[in-house]
Image (cartoon, rainbow, N blue to C red):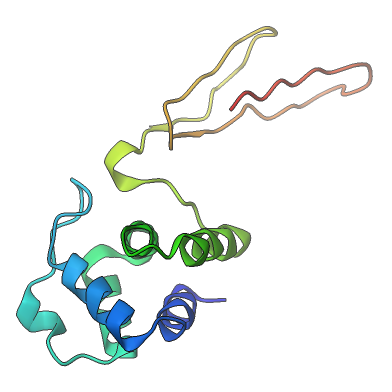
Length: 142
């Protein structure tokens, strides 16, 4: 599913009051990397017009992250989780913009190398090439 459709589907599940709260929060600074949207750009906008303004302002990935964060603020945690899950299933990332740190892929990873990331960051694990027979151990800690 395309991001605009996903966001519209999410907003369609909100009551009119919840939708107005969502637009109200868009006027505020949600993440350091996302500038608030001016009130005039959202005034009297429908749900699909709001989606367009958000994507124009933030880009698709940040629009999803901002929407999920606002949904949490208006006590729509299940809607936020559903949005993130569906976005991730569609091939998107759900990295929080304020804490995103993307580690570049390692050119060559030696055995026993430990990689770590802060909350919300992404690690690109090394690609395993050559002989893959024999035991391999992977430990993923949350």
